Image 1 (tube, helix red, strand yellow):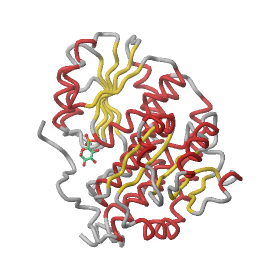
Image 2: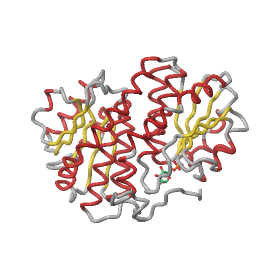
Image 3: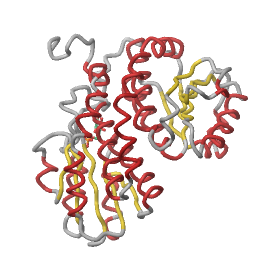
Length: 349
Ligand code: G6P
């Protein structure tokens, strides 16, 4: 097992370090994705179906497709799919996202959907059950993922989704920007020490909030999921604008709040929301651009190239949140590769 870990202490950290390469490998599928897009029949609606981390990747797909192309899109949890199946028809494209290709709820949903609609599966494990059922298959090229908590496979799912959106929307600029991402991802991995320090500071926290808006509301959800899975700390992801409608009542002195604040059209509103939280005594951990002067008085900040605007930020900002969960887990003496009560692939409904 030591040899398989390639010198790393855990599979999870090894898999996070593989992310820059995974981005390159998945981008090399671009031509295949373009070809699949050209084969789609006529559709006027997209429906994503997934569970867990794959569900969060799907949510980013929904934000991207609706905002960049304008095709009505929804995301349904595979375990809730049966309640929504009546609206499917031949003009709906149903996209199944699954790392393992073996999640029971997702397989069941695909069997129902293919009777009425065209289906596409975005899958990591080659030859898995889902790949035999779907009309089209895109492979994510992340390689085997051993750690229970999904990390590199999430990044590769996102790359596939962004490529899909770029081709569906004939968006050359988005395509060009994607090629910058793998270079910039390496920089994030060089600030491991800083993230370790933040992890030490907050390892005794009972609750964490993760706040994001738009494309990064799903990033907030995924950051909180990573925390729950491998540190056993309660983490809640929330859309920045919804705080006033409840969670603000829970903000108290020294509660850690992760604020996702990339440059872009949503910046000002999200900034104001985070100010409200800070004013109530929370300890802020901010992810934002390295030229953002408003962050001067923030102690814990994880900074990115300002080229990474809000549309692209979900691809890279999540890496820091994966590392943060990993190091809190280590600080607490938990084995992040084998969290209690969880399985890599859930094969029961
Ligand atoms: C399990 C895993 C998660 C994963 C989810 C969906 O809960 O622990 O990491 O996101 O299943 O799995 P899938 O293979 O369908 O993406």
